[in-house]
Length: 325
Image (cartoon, rainbow, N blue to C red; front, side):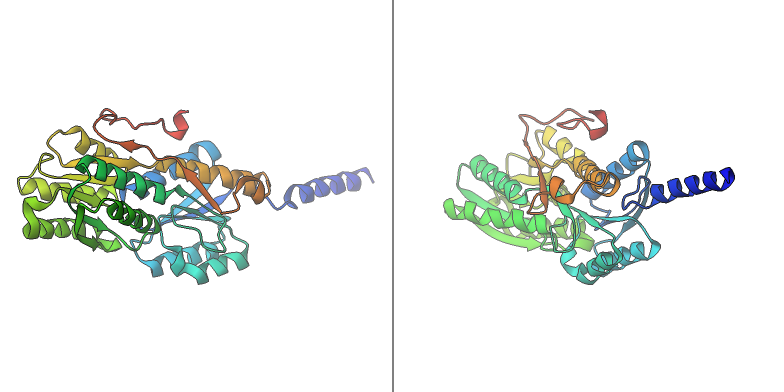
């Protein structure tokens, strides 16, 4: 009798332990839009470090390499493998409606990082790209003295870059003496090569008529800067404004001859840390999503503008990493 009672109590405890809807040891499937982008490498690095060292979760990673169809397939593959959560970084979720529906049916939540919000996902943790664009445009106009000729290089496939570019138009409208000579959109799968060729073409067509270059993010600015310097131009001839705040951008900015002079810095490691904190609260601790996620389903992280007056020294960022706090 005592033996049967003991077995019953143990069985009840086991049932209670596993009957909840939250778990402590998660498996996350992470898809990055294109790992060739340094921003996505920084998010991936933070995801891997925090999952391993802080949360002790299993993290699988995949790279869509700029392909929307590959992105959707990778989300579907993770769901088929039985992951607990899917995270998606720097991708166009508008092309993944069916994969998102599959995740909803399977009860697998999707958390986005700088991918824009679409119905069916939990949240998008990002920077306010309209704010980034406004800072870029205002800095460009101020440094030009509100007159001059510019070119721009962007990419229509990423929501953030589109928004940044859209905010340049009202700046140009308010500054009619700034003339846009041309705009070029790179392809996601070949962004660096496209940006370099676009800048070389601009230089062939306009030469030192160009006073400034607007670049949608730092990798494009890096390509443009190299093309400009190879033609013998320096910061005195024309300048570049970018966005992201990568270490290579700071190296450009520290060089007084380099045309790349400013970037609006994003805290990519914090995109990862905030996303994982949300996953921990909601999926592990059972906190209601409406207690920690705003109604707009977006969480914005601050973005300082960095130029020669406040650029950090070599090997440093303008802020500590999340794991250093």
